[in-house]
Image 1 (cartoon, rainbow over the protein chains, first blue to last red):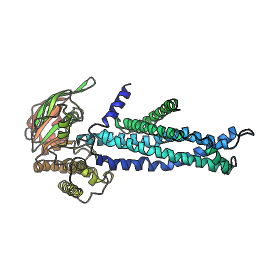
Image 2 (image 1 turned 180 degrees about the horizontal axis):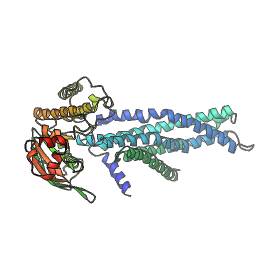
Image 3 (image 1 turned 120 degrees about the vertical axis):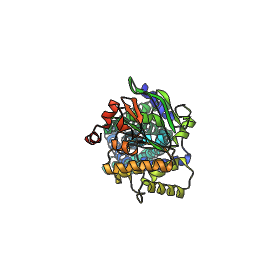
Length: 242
Length: 247
């Protein structure tokens, strides 16, 4: 409870004594590149295999004489949009971006760089953390959209190459009884997960004290806590929105 | 001038500062000395607002830094320049960006004026043509100089230095001491240096406070520190063979 209180106070402090908007603009652009563009490779790799494996496993479990082939891509589509792309990519995001945020802020803390900002009269939490959270909220939904596209594409290739489904059936299944609400649902999850990962990781890093060992611990805690929070939020959002 | 009045500070049950008072005047290098773990850095952190003292006041030219007035706090902080023990340069920025940082945040100068000011400060600290180097590419002594340049770039009225020559060789350490003294005179700043280095005490100690176990035991200057009768101070001052020979 004490940590939850500190976390809420930390979030409030992000909006106090803010610097000029101009200052944040370049910081947000830099963070967007670091958080979004630099994560693109790992997101694509994870997504393509995620889609491919989902296609093969669905085919292995579901297809029989009474079940049409296009069900495979229908399952891949819904699983990708509803769960795999937002949640699995959020966990990958926590591992890559979350640990990076915590490590960076933790190192800045133990090397007195955060103290230096405070002495200059800069609100260090707002200056360092707010751009990371905004950049995450801007970039993570884009990563989720790319991930969903690449995963479905991965499924198409895996299905075609292994001949478990034809290209035509796959595309037919993708279009069959599509519920458009799945897209906003995936994006809502993406916004929430982006906030969770960036804010929890920043909180862990910002309050690091000690030395290199503690920076490592902060990074680990950032990933662990973010993953737990993602799964809890995933359940709550599914309960509320579906 | 900076005045501290009855500063006390404790962490959990452990009291580390006991009722410390002192006056640090402008244009003079003021030293806070003492052995490791006596509360020097805690006192410095209380003075720059990184820690809140339990009791007491810190006055910057009669402006109460501990009043809780956030506007005043920000105003005073923008007059403060600080050199941290390891420099605390921002790893992601090069030397020029590090020094320019306070100007980017606090001033409305044009980019050309900022660069001009950065170069002027680099010249003042005896460094030139290293603008584009990253902190990882320069030596410890250079990092301290860049840290000093960053501390003075915003025309700071108050200069704080936390163990400015720790980890430096004796020649570079003396150069840093001389630089602090020179800048204090040239820029007329109120300079406070936390150190346990006796060379610094002798070189630049125009006003000295000696802390022992969180208490102020002595104040004076580098001329009369060697004549003190206080046992703890003598033990600190004459801890090495050279100083004992001098005695």
